[in-house]
Length: 123
Image 1 (cartoon, helix red, strand yellow):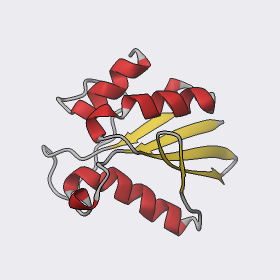
Image 2: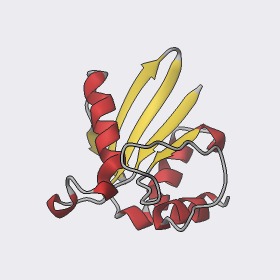
Image 3: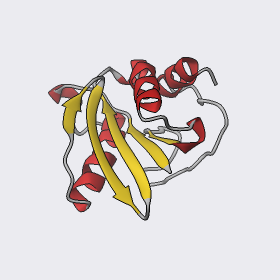
Image 4: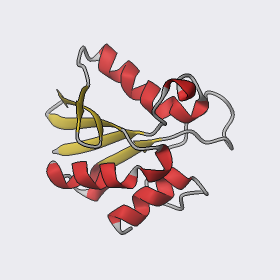
């Protein structure tokens, strides 16, 4: 099975270390722990790996967060990944620092990056 894991963030040094880049930071930590590296490809930095017989594509879009949908759609189609096998990592100001919420479906809760991804994927 194939999975697409997308970490949202904003490109540029001025955004490094901000809460908006938590998706990038999570994927960077995961890649480092897995001893893999990202390469710059179409629409972002991408890494591929296998984990327990699963093929994972890690994506850090090179677009600004609010326009991430093109990158997600491109890699979903390129890698032939079912929409149910996409995980998007984002910040959520409504959660206390360090808290994690996993939602299998629901609204974008006003998050423009998630909104753009949903529009581009037609969900």
